[in-house]
Length: 335
Image: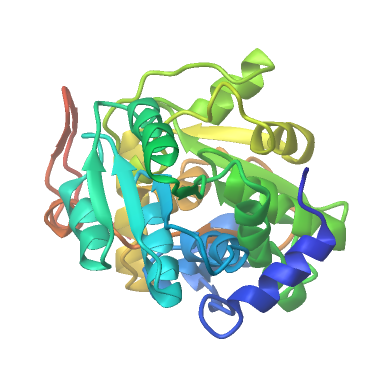
Protein backbone atom coordinates (compact mmCIF):
# COMPACT_ATOMS: atom_id res chain seq x y z
CA UNK A 1 0.00 0.00 0.00
CA UNK A 2 1.32 3.43 -0.93
CA UNK A 3 1.82 5.95 1.88
CA UNK A 4 -0.75 8.71 2.24
CA UNK A 5 -0.99 12.06 4.05
CA UNK A 6 -2.07 10.37 7.27
CA UNK A 7 1.10 8.25 7.16
CA UNK A 8 3.21 11.39 6.75
CA UNK A 9 1.52 13.06 9.73
CA UNK A 10 2.10 9.94 11.83
CA UNK A 11 5.74 9.82 10.72
CA UNK A 12 6.24 13.44 11.76
CA UNK A 13 5.09 12.47 15.24
CA UNK A 14 7.34 9.40 15.35
CA UNK A 15 10.52 11.34 14.53
CA UNK A 16 9.67 14.57 16.38
CA UNK A 17 12.50 16.01 18.44
CA UNK A 18 15.18 13.74 16.96
CA UNK A 19 15.13 13.82 13.16
CA UNK A 20 12.91 16.78 12.22
CA UNK A 21 13.16 20.50 11.51
CA UNK A 22 16.54 20.70 9.86
CA UNK A 23 17.42 24.21 8.64
CA UNK A 24 16.51 25.45 5.16
CA UNK A 25 18.82 28.32 4.32
CA UNK A 26 19.04 30.73 1.37
CA UNK A 27 22.22 30.71 -0.70
CA UNK A 28 23.04 34.15 -2.12
CA UNK A 29 25.75 32.72 -4.41
CA UNK A 30 23.56 30.04 -5.98
CA UNK A 31 20.59 32.43 -6.10
CA UNK A 32 22.66 34.81 -8.21
CA UNK A 33 23.37 32.00 -10.67
CA UNK A 34 19.73 30.86 -10.82
CA UNK A 35 18.25 34.34 -11.11
CA UNK A 36 15.82 33.36 -8.35
CA UNK A 37 16.20 32.45 -4.70
CA UNK A 38 17.85 29.07 -4.08
CA UNK A 39 17.36 27.39 -0.72
CA UNK A 40 19.27 24.46 0.76
CA UNK A 41 17.47 21.99 3.02
CA UNK A 42 20.29 20.82 5.30
CA UNK A 43 19.63 17.16 5.99
CA UNK A 44 23.39 16.79 6.46
CA UNK A 45 22.70 18.32 9.90
CA UNK A 46 20.85 15.19 11.07
CA UNK A 47 22.38 13.33 14.09
CA UNK A 48 23.69 10.63 11.71
CA UNK A 49 24.68 13.16 9.06
CA UNK A 50 21.98 12.16 6.55
CA UNK A 51 18.24 12.29 5.83
CA UNK A 52 17.89 8.52 6.06
CA UNK A 53 17.31 8.79 9.80
CA UNK A 54 13.76 9.95 9.18
CA UNK A 55 12.59 6.85 7.33
CA UNK A 56 14.53 4.48 9.56
CA UNK A 57 13.15 5.97 12.78
CA UNK A 58 9.60 5.87 11.47
CA UNK A 59 9.91 2.24 10.34
CA UNK A 60 11.50 1.13 13.62
CA UNK A 61 8.76 2.91 15.59
CA UNK A 62 6.22 0.51 14.05
CA UNK A 63 7.91 -2.63 15.38
CA UNK A 64 6.60 -4.66 18.29
CA UNK A 65 8.59 -4.97 21.51
CA UNK A 66 9.28 -8.67 20.87
CA UNK A 67 11.05 -8.00 17.55
CA UNK A 68 14.18 -10.16 17.25
CA UNK A 69 16.12 -7.35 15.58
CA UNK A 70 16.31 -5.41 12.34
CA UNK A 71 18.29 -5.87 9.15
CA UNK A 72 18.81 -3.89 5.96
CA UNK A 73 21.00 -3.55 2.92
CA UNK A 74 22.58 -0.16 2.45
CA UNK A 75 25.01 1.98 0.48
CA UNK A 76 25.84 3.66 3.78
CA UNK A 77 23.38 6.24 5.05
CA UNK A 78 20.34 3.97 5.43
CA UNK A 79 22.49 1.61 7.49
CA UNK A 80 23.47 4.48 9.77
CA UNK A 81 19.83 5.41 10.19
CA UNK A 82 18.75 1.87 10.98
CA UNK A 83 21.64 1.37 13.41
CA UNK A 84 20.83 4.64 15.22
CA UNK A 85 17.09 3.96 15.38
CA UNK A 86 17.58 0.36 16.53
CA UNK A 87 19.96 1.42 19.29
CA UNK A 88 17.34 3.83 20.64
CA UNK A 89 14.91 0.88 20.87
CA UNK A 90 17.53 -1.50 22.27
CA UNK A 91 17.26 -3.73 19.19
CA UNK A 92 19.90 -5.77 17.41
CA UNK A 93 20.81 -4.26 14.03
CA UNK A 94 22.47 -6.03 11.09
CA UNK A 95 23.54 -4.10 7.98
CA UNK A 96 24.51 -5.82 4.73
CA UNK A 97 26.61 -3.90 2.21
CA UNK A 98 28.53 -4.64 -0.93
CA UNK A 99 32.25 -4.17 -1.31
CA UNK A 100 31.44 -1.01 -3.32
CA UNK A 101 30.54 0.91 -0.14
CA UNK A 102 33.37 3.23 0.98
CA UNK A 103 35.19 2.04 4.10
CA UNK A 104 34.45 5.32 5.90
CA UNK A 105 30.72 4.60 5.64
CA UNK A 106 31.17 1.00 6.80
CA UNK A 107 33.08 2.11 9.88
CA UNK A 108 30.52 4.81 10.63
CA UNK A 109 27.77 2.19 10.78
CA UNK A 110 29.87 -0.15 12.90
CA UNK A 111 30.51 2.68 15.37
CA UNK A 112 26.76 2.93 15.94
CA UNK A 113 26.68 -0.68 17.15
CA UNK A 114 25.44 -2.54 14.09
CA UNK A 115 26.75 -5.91 12.90
CA UNK A 116 28.26 -5.59 9.43
CA UNK A 117 28.09 -8.13 6.59
CA UNK A 118 30.05 -7.33 3.42
CA UNK A 119 28.54 -9.27 0.55
CA UNK A 120 29.66 -9.24 -3.08
CA UNK A 121 29.97 -6.37 -5.55
CA UNK A 122 26.42 -5.03 -5.71
CA UNK A 123 23.34 -4.08 -3.74
CA UNK A 124 21.67 -7.18 -5.18
CA UNK A 125 24.33 -9.33 -3.49
CA UNK A 126 23.77 -7.50 -0.20
CA UNK A 127 20.00 -7.90 -0.54
CA UNK A 128 20.39 -11.64 -1.04
CA UNK A 129 22.20 -11.84 2.30
CA UNK A 130 19.41 -9.81 3.94
CA UNK A 131 16.83 -12.31 2.75
CA UNK A 132 18.95 -15.25 3.93
CA UNK A 133 19.36 -13.79 7.42
CA UNK A 134 15.69 -12.84 7.67
CA UNK A 135 14.77 -16.47 7.07
CA UNK A 136 17.53 -17.93 9.25
CA UNK A 137 17.34 -15.60 12.26
CA UNK A 138 13.87 -14.06 12.18
CA UNK A 139 15.11 -10.50 11.70
CA UNK A 140 12.76 -7.77 10.47
CA UNK A 141 13.86 -6.14 7.21
CA UNK A 142 13.77 -2.36 6.87
CA UNK A 143 14.21 -1.68 3.13
CA UNK A 144 16.22 1.41 2.16
CA UNK A 145 13.51 2.93 -0.06
CA UNK A 146 10.74 0.59 -1.21
CA UNK A 147 8.73 0.64 2.01
CA UNK A 148 5.61 2.54 3.05
CA UNK A 149 6.95 3.67 6.43
CA UNK A 150 10.38 4.58 5.09
CA UNK A 151 8.85 6.68 2.31
CA UNK A 152 6.49 8.37 4.78
CA UNK A 153 9.46 9.24 6.99
CA UNK A 154 11.35 10.81 4.08
CA UNK A 155 8.17 12.63 3.05
CA UNK A 156 8.34 14.73 6.22
CA UNK A 157 11.18 16.64 4.50
CA UNK A 158 8.82 17.79 1.77
CA UNK A 159 6.16 18.70 4.32
CA UNK A 160 8.64 20.83 6.27
CA UNK A 161 9.89 22.55 3.12
CA UNK A 162 6.41 23.53 1.97
CA UNK A 163 5.37 24.67 5.44
CA UNK A 164 8.41 26.97 5.53
CA UNK A 165 8.20 28.18 1.91
CA UNK A 166 4.85 27.60 0.20
CA UNK A 167 6.04 29.87 -2.63
CA UNK A 168 8.59 27.34 -3.94
CA UNK A 169 8.32 26.66 -7.67
CA UNK A 170 10.61 23.60 -7.81
CA UNK A 171 12.24 21.11 -5.47
CA UNK A 172 15.39 19.40 -6.78
CA UNK A 173 15.81 15.96 -5.19
CA UNK A 174 18.76 13.54 -5.35
CA UNK A 175 17.39 10.35 -6.92
CA UNK A 176 18.48 6.79 -6.22
CA UNK A 177 16.01 4.10 -5.20
CA UNK A 178 13.30 6.74 -5.09
CA UNK A 179 12.22 6.68 -1.45
CA UNK A 180 13.25 10.29 -0.88
CA UNK A 181 11.97 11.59 -4.21
CA UNK A 182 8.67 9.73 -3.90
CA UNK A 183 8.06 10.90 -0.36
CA UNK A 184 9.05 14.52 -0.96
CA UNK A 185 6.94 14.65 -4.12
CA UNK A 186 3.90 13.18 -2.37
CA UNK A 187 4.05 15.64 0.53
CA UNK A 188 5.00 18.71 -1.48
CA UNK A 189 2.56 18.20 -4.35
CA UNK A 190 -0.24 17.54 -1.87
CA UNK A 191 0.42 21.05 -0.54
CA UNK A 192 0.96 22.62 -3.99
CA UNK A 193 -0.06 20.54 -7.03
CA UNK A 194 1.63 22.93 -9.48
CA UNK A 195 5.04 22.46 -7.86
CA UNK A 196 7.68 20.80 -10.06
CA UNK A 197 9.75 17.97 -8.58
CA UNK A 198 13.00 17.22 -10.40
CA UNK A 199 15.04 14.10 -9.64
CA UNK A 200 18.79 14.21 -10.22
CA UNK A 201 21.18 11.25 -10.51
CA UNK A 202 24.74 10.65 -11.65
CA UNK A 203 25.06 9.62 -15.29
CA UNK A 204 26.81 6.31 -14.49
CA UNK A 205 24.58 3.61 -13.02
CA UNK A 206 21.41 5.68 -12.50
CA UNK A 207 18.96 2.89 -11.66
CA UNK A 208 15.69 4.81 -11.34
CA UNK A 209 16.35 6.82 -14.49
CA UNK A 210 16.96 3.60 -16.43
CA UNK A 211 13.80 2.07 -15.02
CA UNK A 212 11.68 5.09 -15.91
CA UNK A 213 13.00 5.01 -19.48
CA UNK A 214 12.24 1.29 -19.73
CA UNK A 215 8.83 1.60 -18.13
CA UNK A 216 9.71 -0.99 -15.50
CA UNK A 217 12.48 -1.82 -13.02
CA UNK A 218 15.61 -3.08 -14.75
CA UNK A 219 18.97 -4.45 -13.67
CA UNK A 220 21.87 -2.01 -13.87
CA UNK A 221 25.60 -2.35 -13.39
CA UNK A 222 26.97 -0.54 -10.37
CA UNK A 223 30.11 1.51 -10.91
CA UNK A 224 32.15 3.64 -8.50
CA UNK A 225 30.90 7.23 -8.29
CA UNK A 226 31.41 10.37 -6.26
CA UNK A 227 27.67 10.01 -5.69
CA UNK A 228 28.11 6.56 -4.12
CA UNK A 229 25.02 6.99 -1.92
CA UNK A 230 22.92 7.05 -5.11
CA UNK A 231 24.27 3.71 -6.33
CA UNK A 232 22.51 0.36 -6.45
CA UNK A 233 19.41 -0.96 -8.17
CA UNK A 234 15.76 -0.36 -7.32
CA UNK A 235 14.83 -4.06 -7.23
CA UNK A 236 13.05 -5.83 -10.05
CA UNK A 237 10.21 -6.56 -7.61
CA UNK A 238 9.86 -2.87 -6.65
CA UNK A 239 6.35 -2.29 -5.30
CA UNK A 240 6.15 1.41 -4.40
CA UNK A 241 8.96 3.82 -5.18
CA UNK A 242 9.12 3.15 -8.95
CA UNK A 243 5.41 3.79 -9.47
CA UNK A 244 5.45 6.86 -7.25
CA UNK A 245 8.47 8.36 -9.03
CA UNK A 246 6.90 7.57 -12.41
CA UNK A 247 3.68 9.32 -11.41
CA UNK A 248 5.03 12.24 -9.37
CA UNK A 249 8.36 13.35 -10.81
CA UNK A 250 8.22 16.02 -13.50
CA UNK A 251 11.69 15.31 -14.86
CA UNK A 252 14.92 13.43 -14.20
CA UNK A 253 18.32 15.00 -14.92
CA UNK A 254 21.69 13.24 -15.07
CA UNK A 255 24.95 14.94 -14.08
CA UNK A 256 28.53 13.88 -14.75
CA UNK A 257 31.20 13.04 -12.22
CA UNK A 258 32.97 16.28 -13.16
CA UNK A 259 29.80 18.26 -12.48
CA UNK A 260 29.37 16.56 -9.12
CA UNK A 261 33.02 17.29 -8.26
CA UNK A 262 32.58 21.00 -9.01
CA UNK A 263 29.31 21.16 -7.09
CA UNK A 264 30.96 19.66 -4.00
CA UNK A 265 33.63 22.34 -4.29
CA UNK A 266 31.06 25.09 -4.73
CA UNK A 267 28.97 24.02 -1.76
CA UNK A 268 32.10 23.97 0.39
CA UNK A 269 33.60 27.27 -0.73
CA UNK A 270 30.33 29.20 -1.03
CA UNK A 271 28.42 27.79 1.96
CA UNK A 272 31.20 26.20 4.06
CA UNK A 273 29.29 22.91 4.03
CA UNK A 274 30.59 19.35 3.76
CA UNK A 275 28.30 17.62 1.27
CA UNK A 276 28.79 14.09 -0.02
CA UNK A 277 28.58 13.61 -3.76
CA UNK A 278 25.04 12.24 -3.73
CA UNK A 279 23.80 15.33 -1.93
CA UNK A 280 25.52 17.73 -4.35
CA UNK A 281 23.74 16.58 -7.51
CA UNK A 282 21.02 19.23 -7.25
CA UNK A 283 23.61 22.00 -7.22
CA UNK A 284 25.47 20.18 -9.99
CA UNK A 285 22.32 20.39 -12.12
CA UNK A 286 22.03 24.11 -11.38
CA UNK A 287 25.67 24.97 -12.08
CA UNK A 288 25.70 22.96 -15.31
CA UNK A 289 22.62 24.77 -16.63
CA UNK A 290 20.65 21.54 -16.89
CA UNK A 291 17.69 22.81 -14.86
CA UNK A 292 16.67 25.02 -17.75
CA UNK A 293 14.43 28.02 -17.17
CA UNK A 294 13.69 28.77 -13.51
CA UNK A 295 10.50 30.70 -12.78
CA UNK A 296 10.61 31.24 -9.04
CA UNK A 297 12.22 30.22 -5.75
CA UNK A 298 13.70 26.71 -5.81
CA UNK A 299 15.13 24.41 -3.18
CA UNK A 300 17.37 21.38 -3.15
CA UNK A 301 18.13 18.88 -0.40
CA UNK A 302 21.68 18.51 0.89
CA UNK A 303 21.05 14.92 1.86
CA UNK A 304 24.23 13.94 3.73
CA UNK A 305 27.79 14.60 4.82
CA UNK A 306 29.05 11.03 5.27
CA UNK A 307 32.00 10.62 2.94
CA UNK A 308 35.66 9.69 2.94
CA UNK A 309 37.29 12.90 4.13
CA UNK A 310 40.54 12.09 2.34
CA UNK A 311 38.61 12.10 -0.94
CA UNK A 312 36.79 15.29 0.04
CA UNK A 313 40.11 16.94 0.88
CA UNK A 314 41.41 16.08 -2.59
CA UNK A 315 38.31 17.60 -4.15
CA UNK A 316 38.43 20.90 -2.26
CA UNK A 317 42.16 21.15 -3.02
CA UNK A 318 41.47 20.67 -6.73
CA UNK A 319 43.22 17.31 -7.05
CA UNK A 320 42.21 14.39 -9.27
CA UNK A 321 40.08 11.57 -7.84
CA UNK A 322 40.15 8.00 -9.13
CA UNK A 323 36.90 6.02 -9.18
CA UNK A 324 37.73 2.46 -10.19
CA UNK A 325 38.96 2.73 -13.78
CA UNK A 326 37.67 6.31 -14.16
CA UNK A 327 39.55 9.44 -13.10
CA UNK A 328 37.90 12.78 -12.40
CA UNK A 329 40.55 15.32 -13.31
CA UNK A 330 41.43 17.95 -10.75
CA UNK A 331 39.94 21.42 -11.04
CA UNK A 332 40.77 24.46 -8.94
CA UNK A 333 37.59 26.15 -7.74
CA UNK A 334 37.00 29.67 -8.96
CA UNK A 335 34.07 31.79 -7.87
